[in-house]
Length: 497
Image (cartoon, rainbow, N blue to C red; front, side):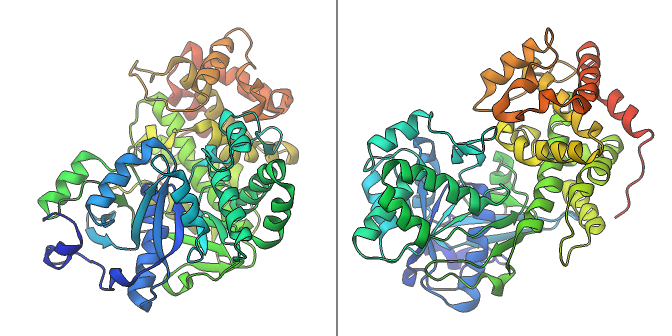
């Protein structure tokens, strides 16, 4: 059965589907970056809200800023913007749920002005983002906006034909101000600490450079709520699509996810908001401890397994957790290096949280590929892992477990293969620079750490380099990463929930 609006009532029994009238929805939310995570998270929460409350003004209009977004644009349009969420439980149970909260999709490559006008329209009250860490044009070494990027320079000179997200946001807000319309809220859903603060800082830096008077209005009127988002959402595979078709649904691009989901949001919005708290979201005054916990345990944990596991030859996160050495190493990293630099989190038992993370990572039905986990590591690790290293160095804490991960990243960037010579699929905007620095590390052991935009001044921290350099040298002589892992942890332990 082809997935579209006309066929909703004819889908197989047991498939959850929208029961609300989608034809009555208006798009109060414009979302930039409609990938798998948005569709398993914000769009899922919104679908649940529409189903439970009958609200009609919080539909979602998706936006793709890149030509690469054409495929998702075409698929969604062909399916009346419906898609299937495939929820895979650890015990093998699989739920199929058709999500109806997305009601439109616009591709900026076809009509940039139409996208700007949609964001500037009075009906749009929230513009949300999943643009990945690299989309924020943030220099990790200086903590400032990167004005050197060609797209930034283009947008400063061509405000009505932007290429990057901050150009679109600025021009849309300029039009709202000119039409005496209230500002919209800009809501980041990316895995970045203080993601709202980051978005605000980057947008204002750009806007002040382009139009200082408008920037002052944005500074006063726009709201940027910080949020912590969480749901493991691996890349959809052809086997997922085929299995869904066997179940009776033909969907060109479904989304696979785990059953667990979490969304913690600061309650600061400029122009109204959905009542997401009615469907499981948590609104708080300060999201900082929640997002720090998640980034330094879950996201950093993914990177630990991703880089070490890739060198070893594992392919998926659950495959790593099924290996007692990797499962124990991850728990030791969490206990010894991540937890000591976390503040208390109200309502959260950290020991239980870490045990649940291990269980979630080990879900054998959610095959999260390590290549996806390692995607754009240069923009992830400064926030996920290097910040933990720096804080432990300041406090005299352990950095051994993280140092081995950085050494593995250097080897990974140089050789591009596992210890057994299997080629790795490395996708990173800084791939060439990482590769050159990693090669030079065989002459200058600190060359990789000297990429200041990623590591800041870590190369000058003797307490770290004294640990890192022997690990790196050993890895180049013997790429069997398991031996160094074993040396750090001793015998692997049986983990208990």
